[in-house]
Length: 418
Image (cartoon, rainbow, N blue to C red; front, side, top):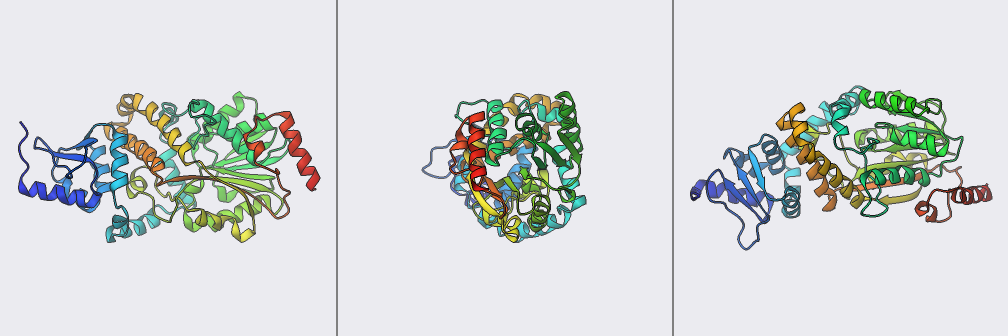
């Protein structure tokens, strides 16, 4: 039979609920009876195995919970995604974000995790160079680690990632023989798709050694080394002139202070006659990314608002041709990743340890919840220089199957405006 909680424990748990809001959950300390807000239907139970965690949950719920969950000192009985969703909806997180310790941590990480040439390489190594075998366990066959595009909700992750690659190409209306730069190319899926299906020549930049080696091997296997060059270098060192500039999933790693610098690189690459696309995780209002994620998962990361992202384009008078928010597509993408990760969690734990496996499960589950609850956005911005002709009259070509007829219509419109 559960033991009634001590008065001091009850007081501490009540303070925890004050910090996280009246979420419909039950908090249990060890073998004692649980406590929950009055008048709610509980959706999950939080078992706390070390009462010392309560102080951290009172002061800094997100970091304290995440650290304790990864360490196995907190157990969730019930659906983890549902638990996170109700906590997200109840939690007045802004109060913690403005606390003195949150501000101090942010200032320290800006210095320690700064996205300089050297700092970016260290930050990217921390996340992306964990080993390709790790990511193969839960990504799609092409190792695409960015938001997929689901033409239908029932599409597989492989189908949705292939659709995303082609969607990006259609948005910038790639034409055979053009030159394209891919900044932050991941494992190379987009660069190879552009060369294989659109006949363009690509220079793809990335500072992750593991990813570049994987991409080069794919290019050799597919006979595309004459069209695609994978360069292990920072985006700031991009040189040459191109028709199009694409960046899918890199802006989050640039750092707000370096947006103008990225804009200079874009203009140096495509001038006033080129066009491009930025695909990135964003926010509806400015706020720093989770301190726990910056500490444990994604050091040096920042997700901007649309207004902040414009700092890369406005100084050079680039026209914004199209803006789309694929927030729910990213939620669906992450659900697929989480499902595959959970099926491989024992293998992950055997190789990297229980702490690592639990931390990454929480990171993926929290990300699903953030996109579902509108905390995170996924923006795609298509832009062009002042001397670049319009690429399409309506958005209809974006939703048509890529075909010769579709390409021909695009050519007719481009030539008509020349």
